[in-house]
Length: 81
Image (tube, rainbow, N blue to C red; front, side, top):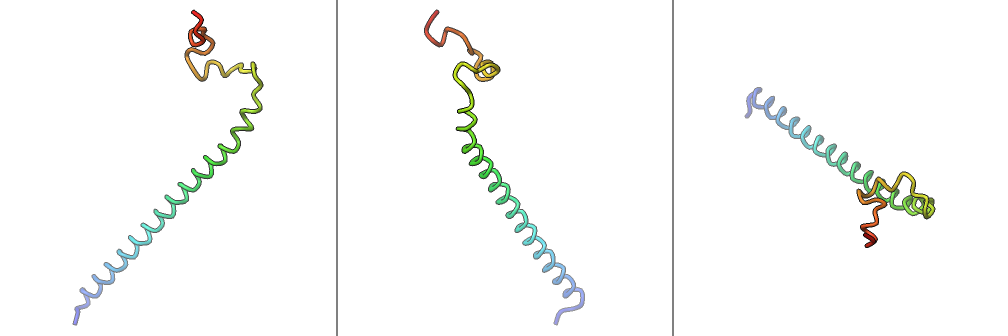
């Protein structure tokens, strides 16, 4: 038969194990929720992107020419030197 101290120690061990399992479960749920939110964001942006690009008229790139490349409006890329 176990002594009182042994029963208390076993109870504390079981409580700690249960808390570790619960923490692991919460961490897994948080990780999966974050991954799902990122996936929803990526899919949402991929559906919105064609509409955003369609709104840009040809020749109306004011403000965009310096954002994409350091060769923005240079004739070097066109082969005209």
